[in-house]
Length: 480
Ligand code: NAD
Image (cartoon, rainbow, N blue to C red; front, top):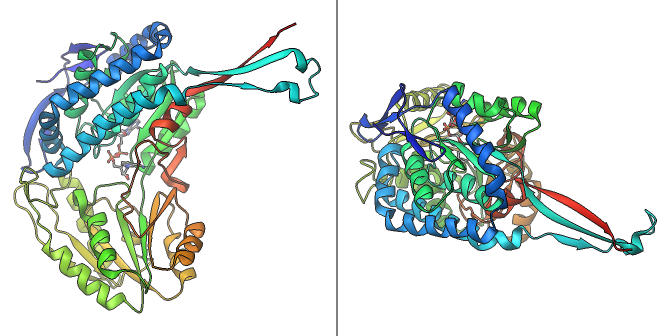
């Protein structure tokens, strides 16, 4: 049995969960679960340690981040195998995620001293209030306090790094609630941070249910900020409760990113990228290209090529180096895919099915041709390997279709006409528009997030997290 991490101590609890390996459908690790009491205790420890931790010189805090990155490098393969085993992410992709998480700790340590700089203001340039000519006004950035970090199942290392590293740099203390489907990677990272010299109390890692651990984090008045990544229904419900106690919010929620392909697009590139954007990690990425909209002049050719590539994808054991598409996270997720495909078929979609893996929670890469706006796959976020393809004739029609959902995370546009790309980019409802490349692009230092029901509050990214999770304070001194 694996213990929880309560302010740096390893604690075994009464409750436990069998984390299942989605590739086999069999138990992978038995993990202790936290409840409300442990969560309350972790928040108290985080609050008590905040005073000292926030006053530690930044260079000391960034040294802990550098050492964490170094220890992660030493344990890179162990972390990747743990991540792949509990999440079903193909091992090659799991390695990429761990490498990104290591880089994230390093970049945070590198960028903190610049991002957290204050400024001085030339108030002698203003006539009001009187006396400005004698004043020096400057600003400093201060940490918020205890931050609650609620993680999704699909990026256990990268999401942890995004929510923990910038907050520690700022001087905040953090209570992490990983998903109960993928808690092991977070526990390993928590252990590494303490090995790197993190003072006791500053961080807890509490696998546990949303109803217990999640609710305590959201309702506890000692928690000053919430950084959440997960689905839109859970995120909006958390936000509505968290604002009642005045918490700072960073809510990264669901998406149904459109890919718009125009008649002058490089077809080979558009097909290759949109197949990968939809089927990578079996479609379980927030910014997967979940709806494909194609100009009617190239539609037939595009669909033929897309279907043949989707059918050729190598589906199977996430531990196999050749695997391109692994399993879904759970049997429930497989049922959701079956329902979505049935709905598409009943509403006039033509269905093409690729290979299926054996043993675990597999669902074959599936393409829905003739997708229309009545179908669930075109309205809601489908978190699995189902690709609806629809056609348009004008760019306005394409934009209207793209903007027809409640989400607005990212979008991609394929065309060789830069003016068209820019016009479309300006009209799309999205946090980022990617021209001639994948909706999956993300730069960890830059702000990432969505509009509409894809995001609320501050954007996630090394710099923006440090700014959102700190307070700018002005100090005015009369020098007379
Ligand atoms: P989820 O919403 O089911 O769970 C997310 C987290 O919230 C889990 O830790 C869960 O235990 C917790 N939770 C559930 N109920 C809660 C409650 N009442 N109070 C507090 N916490 C609660 O999401 P998931 O299935 O783990 O992840 C997939 C979702 O995450 C998808 O919708 C995906 O698009 C989204 N996602 C978004 C981004 C982004 O950056 N926008 C990135 C990755 C994933």
